[in-house]
Image (tube, rainbow, N blue to C red):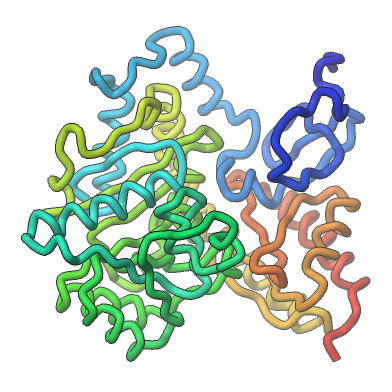
Length: 398
C-alpha cells in the first residue's frame, strides 16, 4: 500500500463532519472490503445503501473503463448517449415522463421541491409555497431538503428554513388538515430510512395520494434509499399500488457513483424550462454508465435475487428478535432491514465491526442493514451467524 494512504492525522484534512472508524479501507471484492492490515469485513451497509453491486463488479468495472477510454464529461449543454438511455429506462421503470439528473439524493429532493412550487405558479397559485412532510422523515442536508427533515437537531444549527408542517405517519386527520391549508407539496418516504426503517402502511400511502389529488397538492415520494430495487421491487411504493407526481432516486442507481434523479409525470414533467434549474455534473457519462450497469443487472435476474435474499433476511431477523431479549422487533423490507435494539444499537454496531461486519444505526435504536445486492448465500449465512453472536452479548430489555 502506498505511504500516501496511511491513515494519519496529518494526511486527513477533511472537515470534522463524520465520526470515522479507524481502519483505512484499501480494496474490495463482492460484498467484502479489506483494510490496509489485511483484515476483511463483510459489508452489510454498502456505503449506506449506495454500492448495490458491491465492490469490483465486472459489468460495472468494464462499463466505466470503456467510458474512461472515450467520451468524458461534457456538461448538460450537450447530449450524450448514456444519459439519454438512462433517462428512458428510468422513466419506463417508474411510470414517469421526464427526469432531472443531479448528483445526490439531497439534490434530487431539492429539485423536486422547486418543481412543486413551479407547478403551483403555472397553475396561477403562487401563494401555495408551504410544504408538508412526516415526522421521522429525512430528505437531505441542503436547505430545502433539510426544511422537510423532521429532526430539529439537524435544522436548528443553521437558522431559518422553508415553511414546513410535519404530521405523524398514519395520522389521516392531521394529514387532511395540513393539505387543506393548500401547501405546494407533500413529501414522504414509503419506507423511512434514517427515521428507523419505518414502513408506511399501504392504506396511508393510498390516502395521501387521494388527498393530494383532491387538494391540488404535488405528491413527492422520496425513494432515495428504498428505491432502485432495494425492497424487492424497483420502487417500494409499488407494493401499495401508488404512483406519485414526482419520485426521487439516488444511492443504488449509481452503484457507488454520485447520481440522483428527480422524475416527474404529467404537468410536473414539463414545468421546468431552461434557466429554472441545472447541474454541471448531473447525469454525466460516467454516472449514467454506472446507472445502466445497475439496470442491466436487475434485468438479468438480480431484482428477483434481491427479493429472495430479502425474504431470507427477514425470516432470520424475525427469529433473532424472538430469541434475543435485547431485540424489540424487526423492521423493513427486502435488503433494507433492521432490528430495534433500544439503548444498545450502537453497541451492536461496534461489536459487529470487531467481528468483521459493517453495519450502522438508524434513529438511534435501530441496527440497520443495507447489504449489496450481490450478497452470496455464504455471505448471508456468515453475516447472520455473526449478528446472532453479537446479539447474544447484549442485555435483555426486561
